Image 1 (cartoon, rainbow, N blue to C red):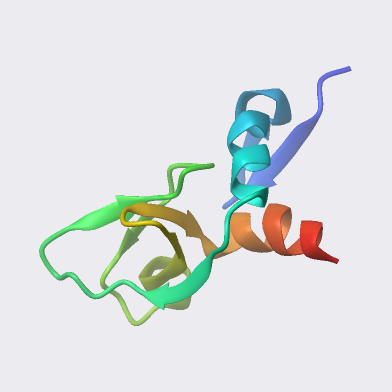
Image 2: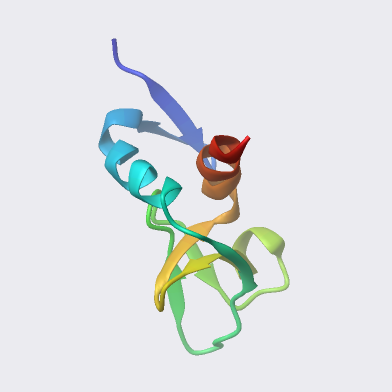
Length: 84
């Protein structure tokens, strides 16, 4: 059976993102404000764009080891849930 998850209003096949979710569960993440006005990053799980913004959904993310980011929605949906 095909399991779908909604992230930022889009449906994703869980099987397509499960490997990245599993890897992310093993890392230590820090909530950070993205502050580089000339660049952006993408969420490792859903490819959401994280950029300098006062909007919490766009301007904040979870950061790990130099350049890996998760959006706040993926962190809440897959990672913080795993820590319970």
